[in-house]
Amino acid sequence: NTLLVGDFLLVNKFVYGAKSPDWVGVPFTRNSQWGIPLGLKLPEAWQFRLPSVMQPQPKDILVFKYPRNPKLEYIKRCIAIGEQM
Image (tube, rainbow, N blue to C red):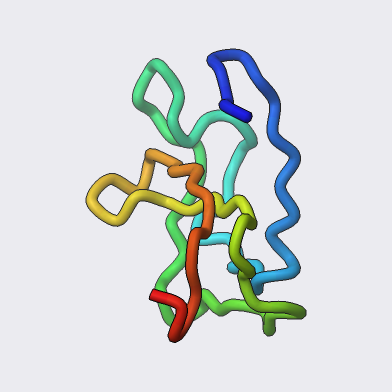
């Protein structure tokens, strides 16, 4: 039950409330190796989150941006929620 390098993970971001895009531009150029993004970062006032359909449950796998470096995505398993901690 471990993810290895090269493994694929299908993620449904809509059930927990998908976030609107924060950048609009040419696909695959935002983090390009040349360092020249061909697009614009949208103002935070234009960004929103869709309502969630369900809440995370224990043993669910969650994918989120690492707070200290938003370019990294973390994959973690939920072990407890609410009063279970």
